[in-house]
Amino acid sequence: MTEIVVHTLEQVQHIHDSKDLLSKMSTKAEKKIIRDTETTRIIWRVVFSFLLAGIVLMGLVIRLSPKEKTVTGMIISNGTGVLVTYALLFFCMWIMMDKLFCSIDAAIKTEKRTDTFNSNTLHNRQYVFKTAAIIFLSWLPYLIICYPTITRGYDFFWQLLQGMGVFPLSNHHPIFGSLVFGAIFRLGYALGGASFGLALISIVQMILMALSMGVAFAVLQTIATIPRKVYYALVVFVCLCPVFPGHAVWAIKDAIFTAITIFLISQYLLNIWCISNNVHVPATASLPSLVFTMVLFSLYRNGVALIAAVLILVLIFFNIRICKNMNRAVKSAVALLVYCVFMLSWNSLMSIMDVYPTNIREAVSLPMRQVIKMLQIHPEELNTESEKILNSLYYEQISKGRDIKSIISSYDDNNADFIKVDFITDNNVIRALIYYWIHMGAKHPGSYADALLRGTDGYWYFGKNPHREKNGEIIHAINTTGPEDDFANDTMIDKRLDALFLPTVKSLEFAGADTSKTFGSICKETPWLDDLMHVSSTFPSARVTFGIILARMENIPLVSLILAPGTYFFILLLCFAYMFERRKIGRLLWPIILIEVLAWLSPVNGYTRYVLPVAFVSILLIGACFTNDPIKRSDENQ
Image (cartoon, rainbow, N blue to C red; front, side, top):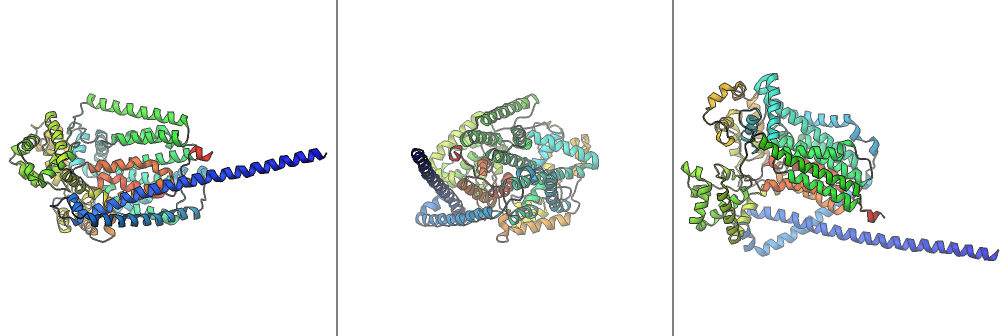
């Protein structure tokens, strides 16, 4: 009996020793995880502090430096001051992020969830439609004041004429978008003439954008514990900030593209949240639904197919590296294959449909900007070789009486759209341009950097560019023929639609149409086109007054920030900084930044509609910062 008791006591002691050992091992493992986490956080804090401080510094240098001096030259000549300022800005960004991120952490801990995934607002269609209805109604005054629509002219009317069959389809603009515009206008024209045809395009855009935000807010309610005050503030901001309703009403391809982008990001975010939390993925966020939305995303804007492909690659990495789920990874790889096959088939289909091929003017916009900017700063480089290349490129402009020096002198950092007008795209000429561009870039890298920085600062720096048109000129443009590159003009164009439409229709050669036809003969053959030419604003005085009010908002401190595209890019980076530090699932959305990068390649600076998806996604990412669970690797869980 004594031996049994002793043996039992030994077993009990062994159990206690094992528990102590397990406790020590667990503590060591936890300490290692904590150390690794803190190291990762510090690394990401340094990266984003460095990046954000650089953005602010470069923006300040551009605004303080004279236009005739290069940005790099200013930095080199004031090296010590620049370094000291950079260090101070780095410190300020570090402190700001520390305070902001701690506040978000505290809000997540104190906010208690009152719902579960199975009974959340995502499956409550009434909630989605109710939120969308509130947003739509808040945007409605813009449509009423600007009835029948807001439009810039060239891009929209090219697509409308192609969609209606007046011009042959051209892939200079997404042909899918052109066909959609044509279908909507046909329906509206049949119901209420050309005026309602234009209005119906704006109404459809408003409905789609409001629905996309309704879905986005429903997803956020599902996956995040957003404090009520923050949630309501985001909804109110979307309702009242002029950037959102102004572009929802504006008849342009970017509006529907933005709605599709919001749908895609909402689906993607819900998909990865469900996977990381071992929850069944709803059909609306499944891989087939994602691929379908990605196809629409790619068809509605040229050049974004790569972004969709990268999103799928990130999903494959997420399933392999983080979730350790090879089954899902294989399915994601199949989804990528299906997407790629479809896009390749679509490109082949365009040739079968006799779609008029566009040239590569857009693709070489940045090299052209940098070459002309370099020649503007270094006129001594305008020699026989450069003149030969530029004469070949701008043969049509020169044949109309212009010369190379006038083209160079008229270059503007904020609006260099003219560089792709009457542009010869012969392969030998383009090849010579690229060779010359590389050669001169090695010789004058500062000029190239200056062209890139001054030509893109409106996209990444918050604040109005001092070299833009003054407020009086903006108001004058609104009252007369219309648009310049500014938010107020982007949303409130001219009173008469034919002010920009007339020269557009006359430029038939670009679209490959029959140039023997005159504008008058085309109108006679197409009654709807003749009706369209006589459409005018229903409330012209209110429209102009409203435009002036928006234009003057740019001069109001702080308020002007909400009109600057760079503000939303800054918010986007702050959200990613938090999500990378805290390992939130929203960090997997980083490919959306590529939309911003694509805008940098355009010849126009600070154009809000080019980065409109970034403004909307930044609101979505603010909510994504409050997601309940960070990404956890399988090995850490074990």
